[in-house]
Image 1 (tube, rainbow, N blue to C red):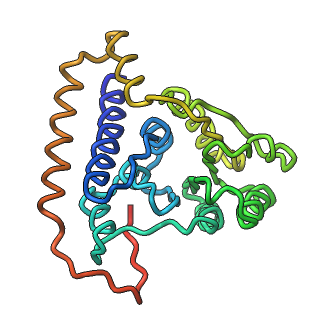
Image 2 (tube, one colour):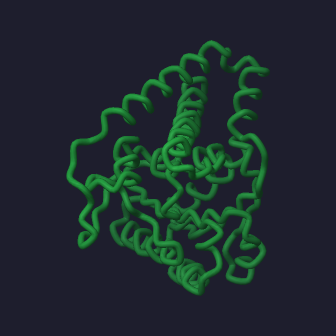
Length: 249
């Protein structure tokens, strides 16, 4: 359990440090959604596919993308990762989930639905499709009210505090396990919360599960990682707007 907590903290710390670096370079605000992102993605492996809004860099990092690749996307370089189409996110994930079901490999598709992706008609169609075809799909909606709506479809919908890593991790584990067993899709609604990263740190240190020095060491490692990635970017050509390029992760 201690190793799992270290891994969770490292993921959240990396997302936080990355977003703060991006904020320095571009002025875009950090999302502050490290706890929810890590709580879902730490259950995933290479069988699984995620899709999310184009500005949610933490999802990619939590799934295992090299931070240099994510930075390359932001800087308009050819080596990049692009997986977000807002309204198309849910349909992309249904396609991935259908492929996993046909291949019978136990994989799942996870859609991260930001505000701009939760309400288009394509999302409603994707939810219907996932239920009708009993797809191994997970829809993670950011405070959208969808947990109540999907009940009419027969899809389980749960609401969790997005700042509580442990609550998200438990809910995501149940949903993903259910999908892998062939029991169909689930919607997880992430309710807004404050200080997920800080809450995690306070909980594990107060309980004695991890000493502060261990977390401080991770902070230092991650800070070095982000700095090195920022000053030694991948040597790739500028992006070609005529070509769609994706990173496998």
